[in-house]
Image (cartoon, rainbow, N blue to C red; front, side):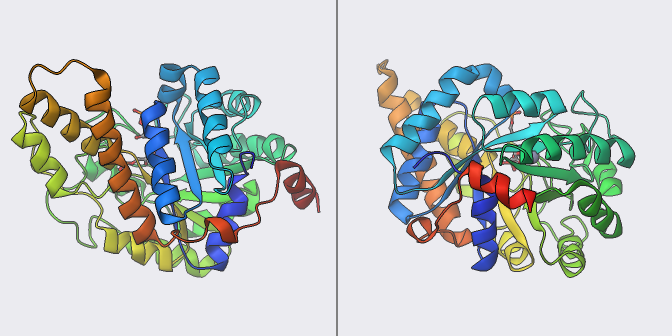
Length: 340
Ligand code: G3H
Ligand code: 13P
Ligand code: ZN
């Protein structure tokens, strides 16, 4: 099966009340881990690459790795998504490279850090929707800004500052109507990276009620939760045990994500949890087998550790078992769908 437009997966998830994990990748082992988890659980797949990932891999390597995944796993529908496109040009170049879905993150300026105006966001997202839909490619937009000062991701705002940039549900209605996006990323108090919350989050910092409000207003809009790693304490413990330094931190509890899925969340972005799993596994090999220098001996366990995280998320989000039940539309069919 060739790579499929993400919209077809999101629609199926909405019809059957489940969510889809969207995992970030930067190399072959991460793609293999996701595909092994998809085979193990029978899950449809969203694989996403950031601008940084595209630079790190080079688009050509990434494209061929993704095509290899599709060739080797013909029964698993796979969408290839651009994460946090910072400009229309970035989205267009991704479409040229074979991405079947793009995120135009117009919540931030082109620098990927400064909060942008609503008018700019609408205009740039609308342009990307017009061009992408003409090719059957899915578009995710974002309204509101995530935090994430520690690791330089997102708006570079502190948690307190980010709380002033939560998605406004009334504005979300206007944004979706004016842009025609297929999916809407919402800001509810999460941030990218490992350092999200200083204690297990409660409703004042992880504002799930925003999602419930948007779902009431826009029951047919697919919502996306960014910064949704759960930052499992056991993964932090492995990193610390084998010499790493991780401060006390808490992520987004899986039960809260499940609550989001009951209220219209269809795509759940997870990168950090896989980074933690990979790092812990590599540290363990380095600490316990000091003479080891064959990369396969540490990248293999790292891949296995990421597979375990992906299996857990695919199962918890409810996508397990659906791979064979979806009849994905092609991009060509989606062109006709958008045209009607
Ligand atoms: O947007 C956040 C993702 O975790 C991607 O991170 O920009 O370091 O590739 P990155
Ligand atoms: P995490 O850093 O919580 O994994 O979030 C990833 C993300 O939102 C990518 O867009
Ligand atoms: Zn994100």
